Image 1 (cartoon, one colour):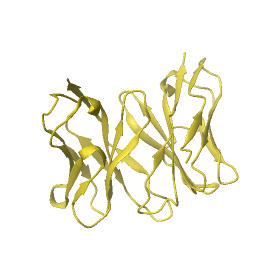
Image 2: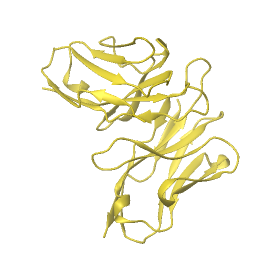
Image 3: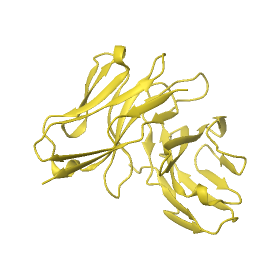
Image 4: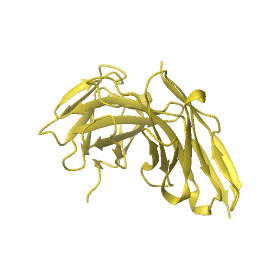
Length: 115
Length: 116
């Protein structure tokens, strides 16, 4: 079946602009995760959704970052007033239930470059 | 704070050599352990996982890993690597916190280059 998809695959923006990154999880997966992969920081957890609610936002690096999920499916990660340090690959993952024995399946990522 | 440490940043091997990539984690509670692989130009894929039971787990493409609880380790092994194993390998720990899902904590990754 279809895997996790993300769009756009690449995004170049100017410092100070807002960007939106989209994630389509595997159909039927209730749990959705956002991670960031950057040089020097590796892979970092950002936020976790169970359905439309976000019980764990502990990884969001600042209040410029926000995310929402609608209909228990598509999620959007928004970065306001982008900074150069936001340049990274943003990865989305989904899992069936978010439970203890779940495996997370990753999308291809969105490469964000802030000039 | 919980963390995962991968000892090797870049490993270079010749085909048919044996591979062992180290992974240690710091967390005193129950963990689930994973190895993910990222081939050039592709997304992260699950290689193998450990939840409970036999501490020696086998994954795809001939990989295996051993969970040693006393050493907080989950090392990845393959007896004979192939050029197609060239990729970046990530060890990850899933720490379950009640009602907060199972976020993955990743190691820094190990880049494996296999020379034909």
